[in-house]
Length: 235
Image (cartoon, rainbow, N blue to C red; front, side, top):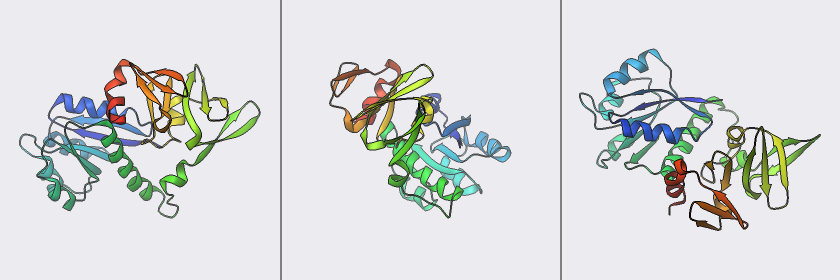
């Protein structure tokens, strides 16, 4: 299942950054983007969104005023360069308050908070903890179903239509997309650093140039993902 996001920011660079971050979460999709709160009011009136990333300081109507004046809004994450609205924003029941410049790891934590609320709405009788959801999953390999323990994964490698999952004890080939396997992995621990590689943050031994090193294997970081990876690793 995917959740539809609305991005509201009067600066194109701000909207583009949020879009690039959202693209790393296979269960999120950008449904629309708006350059003002006035435009957002019209879009919200005619479309359903699950999550909104909202700037505060915008012309005519601020993000705070939009939250005050509107009803039946999606879950909201505020994105702003100003810290003075934090208390008021939480009184308006926002999911999180992100200060610009927004780092990917901080954005990821906000998404996790939003997912907990959204999943609770979808499955009120069967709420699982994050640890329970991400402890293990099964994949098909040849004629077997193999249990993959998430904490044992070192990295995952794309092999055309297949992926190869490298764990502490074995390498497992399965017919699955990279975006699909990401759905089984906690976003605060795993990241796609290259179109062909997903890595486990806890298994990284060092960063060497444009490579991360895991168990002696050098894994490339794509140029497009370099800053995001550094932010996520907090280096």
